[in-house]
Length: 249
Ligand code: ADP
Image (tube, rainbow, N blue to C red; front, side, top):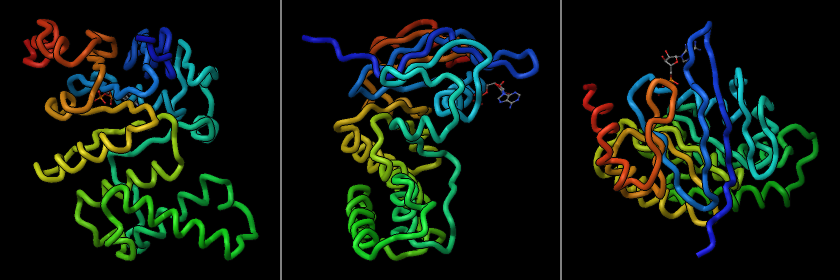
């Protein structure tokens, strides 16, 4: 079988905050079309790594390559423009704006049209139709005209996913997609991620190991900013170093 190519590669990636190494010489290789989970105890450097990959932080050392482009230290807009989208853990929705308006706005900004003066009716209708499709993909079509502030937590997270999908990213970064969810929402989110992974690559930070086990092809365990173990879930979860890190021994 042909090996899928690496779509995202980091080499010696490091980030220091006042001399403290939050991410330390991380070599990561994410195969195209796979779901790659980043796990590790609190403070392991997962969020910092995400911020480096999306351009929200500049690395102290090392290199990041996405789809053949050197994106090291590039601004978030350029990285997003190359096809990397991120779904946030902390909700960033406007309370009064409807679900559909949120997605329309994401579609407009994704095409750069948000900054232009002219927006034809035809174009706006197309955005509106596409917004409904995307809301359907995340199971929110029936709530399209509800203000985001009135959506239950699990559905707010689904809306955030639709906003990331509006950019039609080749690489989708998910920041704890099931954080704070009950069992039903977790199951729904797992099914959803399984569906939207088609045709793209997903990197996710996730604490829930059964979610990781259901979705991830490869798992990278971080500890104190360094890669502790990397491999398929079944091998990683029984690795003595991982068991020790998780039990805090
Ligand atoms: P995780 O997401 O795995 O919980 P983080 O990436 O948030 O870990 O943090 C890794 C380490 O870096 C922690 O010790 C944290 O306190 C530190 N850190 C993160 N951001 C900053 C910052 N802006 N300034 C100083 N230290 C930070």
